[in-house]
Image 1 (cartoon, rainbow, N blue to C red):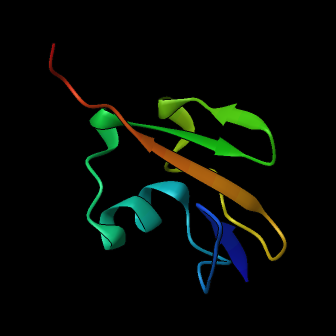
Image 2 (image 1 turned 90 degrees about the horizontal axis):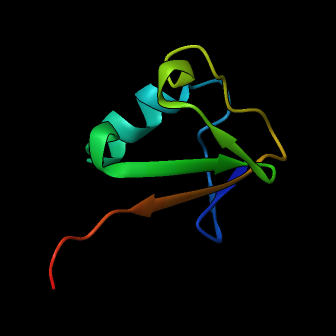
Image 3 (image 1 turned 90 degrees about the vertical axis):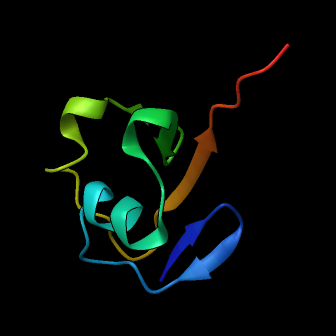
Length: 64
């Protein structure tokens, strides 16, 4: 299991890109942190989530 935004999720084995797509996130409008490190957008397709990972997905919101 992977903890994503505080919730246990069965996402082990998926790439960050695959998880974002399945969860409905726009990869251009989020930042992803995995185990305390920012995942560069260029690595979303090659970064594989593993059991025990802790991930935070933060969406950017516009406004003023």
